[in-house]
Image (cartoon, rainbow, N blue to C red; front, side, top):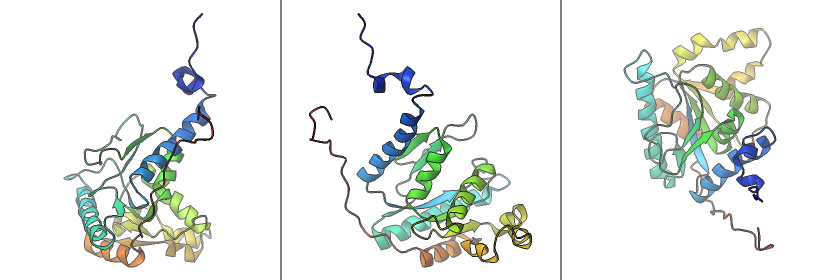
Length: 233
C-alpha cells in the first residue's frame, strides 16, 4: 500500500485553498529567519516604478536613486557599521513579488537576501517591519499602494516608531497627487501633510534623512534553535 506524504511535504495540499494559511505563515517565517541570521534590523526603503530605467523619460530619477542609495550606504558604513541597509548598494535586500510582467529580482541583490512573495500584504509587511525611513520615487499604482500603506499606518498611529517619509521629485508628486485638495475637501487633516516631505536632489535627501534617522544600535542576534522538548520537534 502506498504511503501518502506528510501533509507539509505534499505539494498538492500546500498549493490548495486549505493550505493557504501555511503559505501565508511561510512568507512571514522564512524572511524572519533569514533577516535574523543576517542581523538585518534596520532599513531605508526605496519605492518606485519598475518601468523607470536609466535613459528613459523619468531616467534621471533612476540615476538619482542609485546615487542616493550609494550616499546612504556610505553614511551607514561610517556611522553605524553598515547596520542601516538600503535596497540598493552595500548589502541589498530584494523583496520581489510574482507578477505577469515587469517585476524581476535585479542583479545587485546580495546573495541570500532575495525573497519571492506571492502575497502583496506579506511583502508590504516586510517592507515596513524593519523600515526606519521610506523614500518614494516616481511610480504608479504599486508605488502608491506601498506609499499610502505607510502613510495610513502613520496617520492612524499604528506604527511603534516614527518612519520618516520622503517623496523624491516634488514636481512629479505635486502633479499626480493633489494633497492640498485632500485637506480642502476635509478627507485628511492639515497636519497629515506633515507625515511626509519633498526632496529633489540626492545630497539634500541624504541630509534630510540623516537628520531624522538615528543610527541603529547593534542588537543581539536571535537564534532559531530546534526545540529540545520533543525528539521529533
